[in-house]
Image (cartoon, rainbow, N blue to C red; front, top):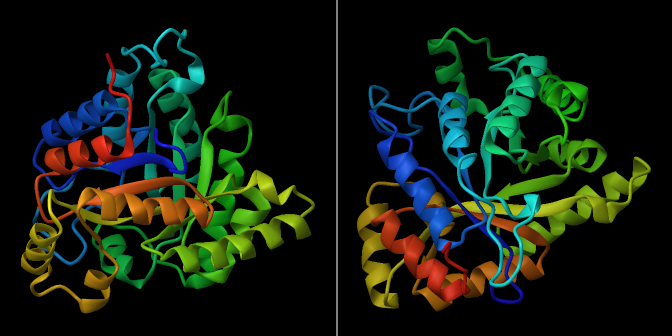
Length: 306
């Protein structure tokens, strides 16, 4: 990894009728030297046809963990691999309230045992866009206070003995003030979706103030970033792809996509690292994911698996 960059990870393609694309993307990311891969927790596509297939997060995660557990840990040339060098799997984000807190903790422990390394559990309370999905699948959709309580209870369970040893890393996601405070009090990290470096730095400052007020060392709470990324061989090509992909999408979403040639995208990821991001999780859009992973890996100086 080039100096000054965060750990780089990817999100997996889950809008499919079978797990082949997700498994292939996960294996490819590991081979290229990415630090991990994440699954999202939606039962249908947000903003797309609700009849479109979507793979369920935790059952897919378990399948990926079984495959990851069969692969040896990575190591630099001439060094012996260590447990911490394993490719990490996780959720970004699990929605609190869809599963009982204790069940989430036991699932996380099981995935870690199968994979040979504890997962990273990104978790959030959800927002109003999730209400139709919850109700359609028979889950209640509480008010903000009820969802915040479910989030806190699930984070607490993930920090307790039910989550196994070593326990999973817990990232609390969301831009709301309550999520930042909870991350500061209980989590290992706070995750900001599609934030600018300036927004990430400001949010992380709030998180660390909350950690200090809770009697924790603020440095123990990391910042992480996730967002949509479009990378092409040349800047003009990226602009054309972004315009094509963005047709009909909300301008606010389009404005948050990190797009450009590899050097431009890596420059933004470097700026996010400087703002406090220990991890950046990229959700590739607007083109073949395999091509974009290869371009990012090369520009970032990742070390491919032998």
